[in-house]
Length: 419
Ligand SMILES: [Zn+2]
Ligand SMILES: [Zn+2]
Image 1 (tube, rainbow, N blue to C red):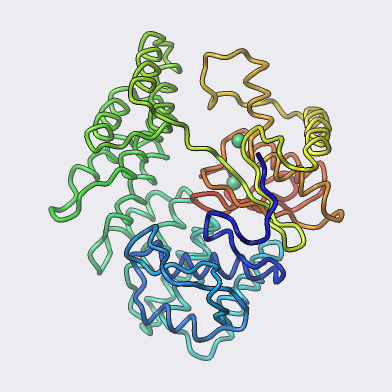
Image 2 (image 1 turned 90 degrees about the horizontal axis):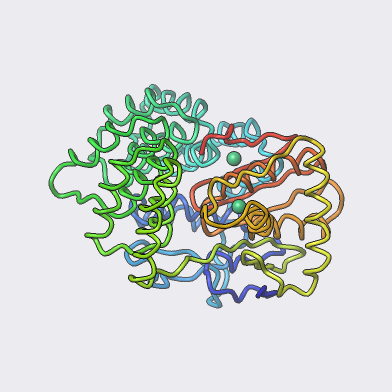
C-alpha cells in the first residue's frame, strides 16, 4: 500500500518539512555530519552547526532508534535553525549539483572551522567527488588551520570509495593521525571489495586491532563484493560469520544465493532458500519517498495503494517503451533466479524507486528536478533506468539511497556507475 502523508511517517528522517526545498538536503547534510552516522561528531560540532542556522529544519532529540549519537529528525518539538554554510552548501548541491558554487561558498567563509571543512568534504564524499575531496583535503593539511578528525578522514575515504580511487583511499587510510574506527575500516573493505581485491578486503577485516570488533555491516560489505565478483569461498565465509553473529537479513541470503546461481550451483541455491524458510527470514521491504509540494509520497515495491496508481503504471509502461527505444535492456541479475524472465522484468519494473520517479514525472512541471529517497541501495536496473529517464525526459533525478547520492542527468549518473 502507498501512504500519502504530511510529515507523519515512520522514518524520522522522512519527516522533513517539505515546503522549504532546502530543508531536506540541509537536514541530510546536517545528519551526515552530525551522525556520520553517530560516531564521529562531537556535541559541540553539532551545536556549532545548529546554532548557525537560517534554513528551518524541524529537529528533535535522539529518538533512541540508533542509540548513542544524537539524532536530528523532524518532530513536534519546534524549529531549530540551521543556517549558513550547510544550508548554502545544500542549496548549491541541490540545484543541479553545482559543486563549483558550493566550493565558492566555502571559500568565501571568513573563518573555516573544522565543521565547515568536514561539511564540504562530506558533501564531496557523499556525491562521489573523490578527486575534489582529495584536493581539498590536501589543502586543509597544507593550510595547517584545522587538524583532521575522524569525520574528516571518513569523508575523504568515502569520496575515494565512491569514485573508485583505491590507491588514494589506501594512502589516506594509512596516513590517518587518529585511530580508525569500524566505519573507516568498513569504507576500506568496501573500497577494496568493489575493486575486486577481495582477499585484501578480507585481510583488512581479520587484521583489525583488538578492541574493534568487525560488525555485521563489514561482513555484509564483503559478501556484497563477493556477489559482484563471484567469489564463492569468501561469500560462504562471510555468510557463516553473519550467521554466527545472529544476523538473519534476507539480503545476506539473497546475495549468497546469487553467488551460487552465477556459478549454476542450483542445489546450493535450493539449500539457501530452504534455510531462509527454516529460519523464518522475512524480506526487508524496499520503499522510496518522493515529495511533491510539501507532501511526502511513499511507495513500496509493486505498490498499488496510491490514489494515482493507474496513472503511475501507465507512465511506467510509457517509460519502458520509450527507453527501450534508446537501447535500455533490463538487468535481471539481481532478481532471484527461479522465476520466469517476464516475471523478473515485471518485478523490476515495479521497484519502489521507479514508481516514485514515474509519479514525480506526472506530478511536476517539465524540467523540474525529481528527488527520491530510498531506504535500501538502489539496484543496478533502477540505476540504469534512471539514467535513461534523465535523458529521455530531460530531467535531473536525484536519488539518495542508503549509501550515497546519485544525480542522474543527460543519461549519466554522478557516481560514474561506481557505487
Ligand atoms: Zn530497482
Ligand atoms: Zn549512480
